[in-house]
Length: 346
Image (cartoon, helix red, strand yellow):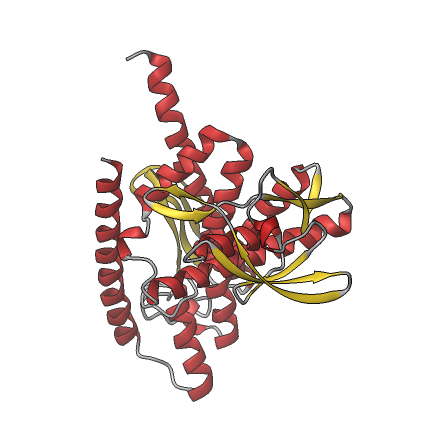
């Protein structure tokens, strides 16, 4: 195997790992910035996990680079232990701790918006959910869909952006969807059929029409970027709903190995493809972290909300035990998903 072949195989994986580390650094950086703004002592800010490669101290914080560039943490005084310091996490007011807890997820969402903004800005036109024209022998045009139709909903799912249309078609269980379109200022209900194509053993709708693009302005670029970001966020909850409803199996989910594979494949395709999947991942990670699951930021936020309402603090040992159990369960689940990822690769 030649050096160039090895490099072409390795470099997309390296890019994927660095992209994941960027998401983690931004997340932990959100905790760090808000901790410092609220005068909470940060004992260590680490990039990566495992053995130390490099370390320096500035102020009262150790900054560490570790061997495994797949993780990181922001270790605050009094975060997981009792501390009498006035600059500890545990000594701050509930609202201050809540800000620090949600800051990581908020930074992930902001990063996702930045990625989407770059994508939208790089396009020649700004997409709209308006049918522009059809491909030759388009099945949908024979079902009543017309050029100029403004697509407002598909199978009851409200359409805000062009990305929503793709999401709705992907979720469809057959080749027919119910649409609500605006035509000549009036809403019309349509039942539209499409041709399908097979991908990884499943049938998906073949979108046989083009969408209308508009000339870019600062206003519509920002508007479209916000809509696309919200669309990515909504897809997280739609996927969770479909998983609970049984439309997807746990084996259909992807963990770290599968995600690295998808990102590396996108890196081989184009920068825009890489940014698109990175936007989806960072928004996904940010929102998932806010779920009230022990060991995640969402659980800590839930505990703080309870403390704010009852004026009673959960004992440190109890919180630590719940987080520990949650972490074990979460790691076990991730091991299961990772095993599934590896079997898919082979």
